[in-house]
Image (tube, rainbow, N blue to C red; front, side):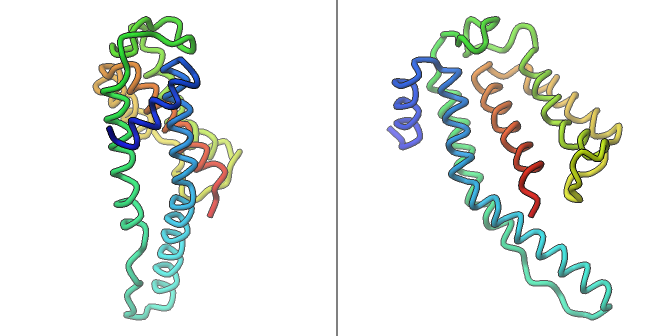
Length: 184
């Protein structure tokens, strides 16, 4: 039994609801990964500033490689392991958080979770276009930024079990909050 599975089972024993367990567990792991995420964003910012500075000076100096890919390499296996835990540990039961879903092992029959995923995916871009947040790392709103998440949700997310969709929705929401509040 992996550490991730053991922690997942521990959360379930406390909440007695797979929906709450998935949300709490995802947020806990995102919180644990927050220092790496901040370090990654700082490293990317330094590299971007160095590239801009190098372009302005017209020197032939090359910027030092960024630490960001290495940190992403460390984070990716953790998120893959979480994905596996949620895809194998959820039994055929519902959650009181999602009353329209009677089985978290099957797709959302009303497509509510994929629609929420699309809304959360587009939220940072929409907030930037309204000048609610000033963040250069989030691109302005465009048609292509609407079409791609919608197509991805229709083709991929709408076919996933509700448990994985809930994980992706929670993870995307935490990522969106990081984009809004962590302006490194």
